[in-house]
Image 1 (cartoon, rainbow, N blue to C red):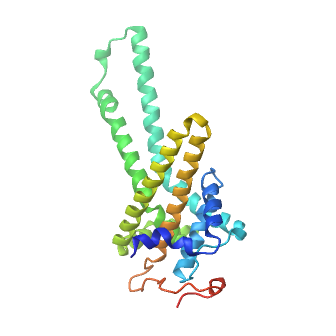
Image 2: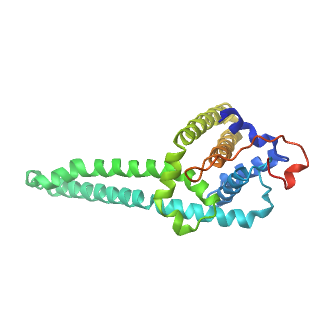
Length: 259
């Protein structure tokens, strides 16, 4: 797998600059970024089919919104356990704070705190915080694989089954890991450039805004890089990965897959 090609393949598609710019704009707006989710899914599908110009047009936004909403709803459901654990930790923190505050005001004897209360106060909340962080990290790690499975047109209930997603990752572990490393490097570069623009242009006020949008471009570019890696993964044991070893020659991009 060519990491350089995964970062640059989108520049070969007709109208790539406008497509990437519009996708970056959508990705920067809450809820509207579901359009960019659907766009990524369609790009994965085009790569799986071996199309020489995988970036789709933005003309089919209702379809992108439908696909993106299904994926985003699934991600929200996956993060629900971590959200509940975070909420419990927050509730206990507030509860213990007000208990301590009340005891301070009333000069209550803090020596009467039981061992159980002490353990809960000192150990439970940090444990809950760590558990929530681990749940979030695991979910975050598997989200790209869900985008690939969404491109296979499986049902929403099938996407809720974690075992096919885990199998997809394990079958393509090194490719999946390479995808993550490429994304981290790419987003780091865009983040550095965005921060630099923001600092240099801070006096002009518009500098931080430009820097933020540069970061949004990096995030959407990262989605397209993920589409490249995910589109080359084998869906089932024994499958051959799809290829993109075609010569780009207009006007074949309109309908012909790679051979």
